[in-house]
Image 1: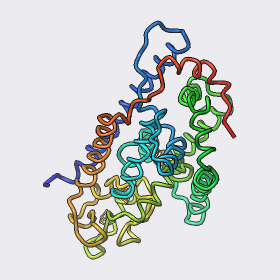
Image 2: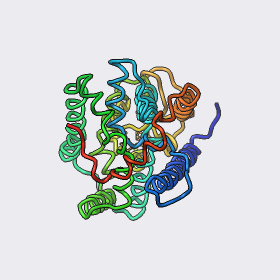
Image 3: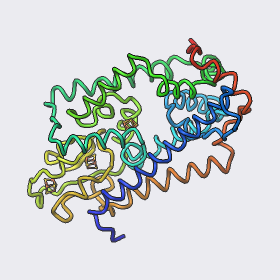
Length: 332
Ligand code: SF4
Ligand code: SF4
Ligand code: SF4
């Protein structure tokens, strides 16, 4: 595979743009479906199942249910499929879901690029970095405790069959269509913070990314730096969305490594940075994005072919849940 490594950045931009456009398209189709459900539009548009990918907490509940009882969530099957795909990607291809697919991460990285051009980015000292990191791990610990530890089969069944769960995607849409003053303030804070601290949401707050990072830590793929040929130009660190101190490492195993390959594409020295399997065997860098896309799209296709993508809830049934979405109360 003789793919020029400088083109990895362009390839990533294309892949991420593709997933962002697809997500926006799904969001628009879902809005049309929602309008139909409210009786505001006569045109019934198919509900895009991919919107369930934005419900990772429901994905964790569904995964536990699947492991306990073998029942593959019939309400949000696409959400469970995307959640499983993200976990498998993390185990095999670092945080490939974050680095190549997640549209939220892509938007965060676009802000980061702009901030870099405007020379606004600030590198937090290590002590502050660690304190801020703790927030996403605390959130992850909380969700793990509340779902993996606390929820038994009975409470899981009560949760997945509750009206709240059936209308939760409409609630998510309302979050964006009619944001409260508090929501706007929080979103504004996150955007402004992202101009000064690299990937603020992803690096410090997202519990989903924290889980993927921990899984990636055990994975076989790493970025290795050859200290002999490294000229210490630090170009790799300037472009690293994980703000990893690459020049202080020989092998990058950090849970913050997205497997984005920006460092490999930017390094001016051939073979100084390389993708390896357990620090030993060097692999073609292109293998990582090919693996991420191949596995993700294969699971998507498999779920579609085996009936694990589209919800089994009757289209008409969504009407009543969506009409009361704003007033649905979280069970328990
Ligand atoms: S950290 Fe969260 S928001 Fe960011 S790219 Fe990963 S999953 Fe998406
Ligand atoms: S170390 Fe390289 S592959 Fe990992 S996040 Fe940083 S730039 Fe991306
Ligand atoms: S870009 Fe390459 S040569 Fe420069 S510091 Fe990073 S690893 Fe070393």
